[in-house]
Image (cartoon, rainbow, N blue to C red; front, side):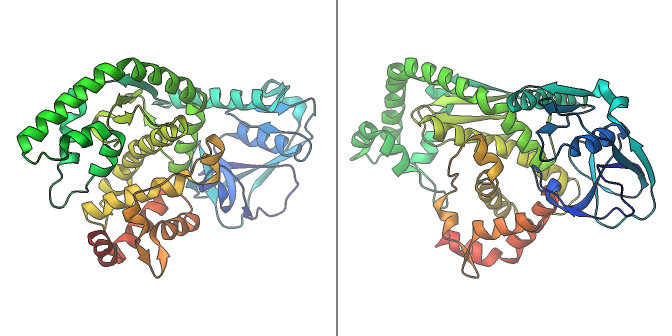
Length: 394
């Protein structure tokens, strides 16, 4: 396939170089290429400004902070079978000896070059251009709707959590810790029908008392989320190499009195406890949205290609470990500094004396892209299935 590479240097051989970017694809030792000749030209010109000023390359633009004028550069037209990444990038891991070299000059591309005063202005332009690119290619950045809901929405879940079956995880302690009055009322009641009536009455009473606070919390959360949402969604898409389709243009966060936050993958909604602090709420939102896009990616990697080795339960356990690993990386810590956690049941699982989340993190660092990471993590879970299942039962 015909592709282009841009460089400020006059090269005789194109050699793979270790790159530093936003995601695993952009951090390989590779030659980076594009189908767009203009994009390669602008990259070549932009790189002549290295160590002089900041610049960015949204589609068909070179955005420069300040008044520095780029020097001439070179583009290299090649014909290779390269790996496709995010944002129409390609990578090639071998040397390229045969190519067509073209010298390019900034005066010929003035209409593509844009000067701004600050780095913040440059970032805003890039995010706006990415939104346009997403829209033109059938994708979107979903709007998150914060909506207080009545107890009838979450009471069935509360009942299940407070009265778990034999093999279910027991959430009694966490729920009753946040609702001490309910704990007192249930302390000497063991008849299931009576317990059910007490629980229902309690949550309807509390809802009437707290509905104003819940509405206020929804407004506050919306304000905070709007500040980081675009950066988060774009970063998540960069990591996974997949985007939310246009038809998924909204995700709903149901504000409830339930301190456990279950999700409904099919409806793109999740519950969020009104009593959590802002930073914890933001972390839960990021965790839940991560799951929505994660399972979209898994659909393409595993279900469509029938590659999965794990059974359903193991695969679901993996899905709860991965967000902690990804969201604690530097890219997401820059969005909001928070120690993302997983269930303590997972943290006691050790493989070869190493905690399981540390093992998954190692697999991530060794993988070239998210698809490769998922396949390798799936194989890891399958190889160690006996140890994992035993630890979860103990």
